Image (tube, one colour):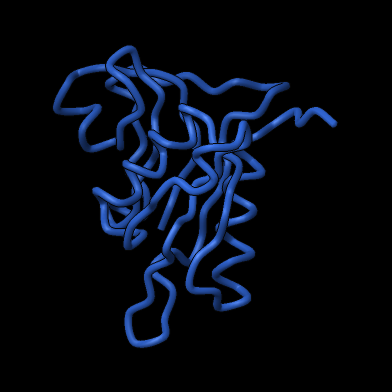
Length: 132
């Protein structure tokens, strides 16, 4: 069965993992999901991620969810760009999420970066999701 929006599935699995208070979740791997996981780790929203089932054809990403005093680090993760409606932003239109308390994940020509890094690099791109 093919999946039409794997990034929405990624966001939903993270949201469901936090709502059921799991320590880690397994997500089917892709290059884009690896880069999004790296951005979330750099910004402190997840503890770590590793790759499991490397020897088989189906590689998974195991994401270790972050809790601070039993409070999830991610309260909301929202998919913005969808298969039917892609949302692109220029460097001047990059949104500030919760007045700087959250981040936007952007797929740019320099790779997948957060909104803060995209402003520093002066690049725009496709707005994938907002996290806070």
